[in-house]
Image (cartoon, rainbow over all chains, first blue to last red; front, side):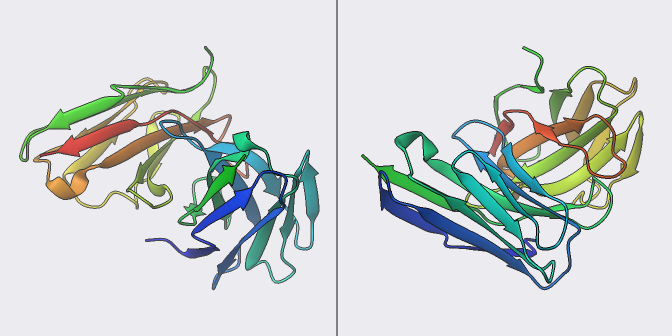
Amino acid sequence: GQQLNQSPQSMFIQEGEDVSMNCTSSSIFNTWLWYKQDPGEGPVLLIALYKAGELTSNGRLTAQFGITRKDSFLNISASIPSDVGIYFCAGLRGNNNDMRFGAGTRLTVKP
Amino acid sequence: GAGVSQTPSNKVTEKGKYVELRCDPISGHTALYWYRQSLGQGPEFLIYFQGTGAADDSGLPNDRFFAVRPEGSVSTLKIQRTERGDSAVYLCASSRTGTAYNEQFFGPGTRLTVL
């Protein structure tokens, strides 16, 4: 089952607004990842975080690896219609195969 | 394209039947992963191959599920005596290696429906 608690479950926002979503866990992770999934497609990696406290940006996306290594957040600034989709956090404890996903945040952007 | 491909894209079967799902990883990627994604959930790990061998099959739910990768490239996920609860999207991913973090590239998935 899911070991990561991701919130919110869904968001309905107006184009141009900023968005924030987060992920928490009772377990420590060594790597935090954020993915986006469009309908009928597999998840696509947006940002990877490797160190506690790390803050990383990718265009309008910013993500942080929490100091406790048990949480992470993703911010999207100035949302646009193509940001619509489901965003997943994922954590890796050690080897590449031990990846756990959150349940996802479904984002809807109204033009 | 050079991405991960999966066939079929959709599979409808009857309870009790046997199904095979195929994954073609990115050329040169030695690590291959299978995940299952139920409606409204994130992907859940099933099995991981490093080369031809299953390095970790701890996510397979029971012995009706089996996967092979005989030549270290294409992989087949096999499900025997399918049950309605097996209905889900089965995702395959590959990465350059499986040791330490390497980006996993996902295929589009196979949507399995068991009637």
